[in-house]
Amino acid sequence: MTNTPRPTTAPEKKPVSPRSDRFFNLPVTILILASFMLGMSEFVVVGILPDIAQGLNVSEVTVGNLVALFAFVYAPVTPLGSAISARFPRFATYLTLMGVFLAGNLLCALAPNYAVLLVARIMIALVSGTLVAIAMTYAPDVTTDKYRTKFIAWVFSGFSIASVVGVPFGTWVANTFSWRITFLIITAATAALIVLMFLVLPRNSHPVTIGFLRQFRLFFDHRIWGGVLTVVCGAASSYVFYTYLTPIMRDEIGVPEQYVSIGLVLYGVACLWSNLYGGKLAERGRGVEPLVHTRPVFCLHTILLASLALAPVVPVYGAILLVALGMMMYLFNSSSQVLYMDVAAQSHPGSMNLAASLNSMSFNIGIAIGSAVGGLVNDHLGLTWLGPFGAVFAALAVVITTLLRRYVPADAARND
Image (cartoon, rainbow, N blue to C red; front, side, top):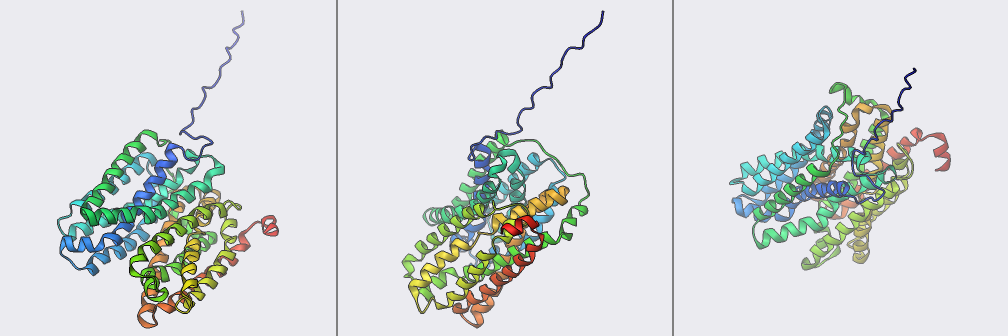
């Protein structure tokens, strides 16, 4: 009697996350809210700076130094933290770093003096960039491929929403109650997010097997450097004038003091649109293609920035121009992120976490350069010249994206 083998069927693999054809599922929403909390914690200091100074009995300049210090820590630590985190399980690492972020904000709320507040802000800066980078790596696990660039755009938009909604709310809370209550609200909301993350985020993970230093071979790829330099120049072009947006509105355009806050909100809404529409631009191809396609954006940005010098002469034009500049401020963000992630996936798969961190790193370097140049220009030449100097950085971005064109596949270049 012959034993006939019984047919076996492999058990169905369950999806690693609650992906669906609906974009705003719970995991995606949680990751967007996490970027909102990161943005609110980073930016709210600007709005509540006088309250902190008065509460801790220090000068406003001293508290203002926290903003520069945050960016100074954020930029270099982000790629290092992302490369290190790639060697550990993603879910546990993400929740651990969120725990550090929570502890930092709680320490801000309870800080008895400036020194403790300084330590708390450094704690937050140490983990914020890496948290954004890890969030980006969740894209294939929490949404479908057709929503990939939309996911990237919305994660970045969490920061814009924070500047439009979170910062004014935090400032109102500080003015009405206490600046410490603002940080307590951030802490409580972060705690609720961590609980939701524990319940719904996928737990699959693929820690890298290559060494720590080998991940940085990514920087030997010219396409990566093209993306980094484009973002640095793009961010610097805006932050030359954005750092002094309030005095430009007040002194150059003549916006009455009581309406400046409304102007800032309108600018923030324009920036939010910029982030979201940037996601649509990033859908135009793979690899370097989307960023190359932003060349016309940088050309127009160059012209508009140069014409900002006319704002005192034609105030109405200056007001419209500021909104237009806000609409262009982040149009390249998603395209550069696509470049980093696609190049890493294609040529440096062990460096995905590092690649995901490069946009945050590059943008913060651009912020630092643009703010520094803006300060020098304002001190020596005045507010009128901020736009033309910003235009120089935008023009450099045009040159860099033109050089990147050589890496676009021939068939795609013909269709460009």
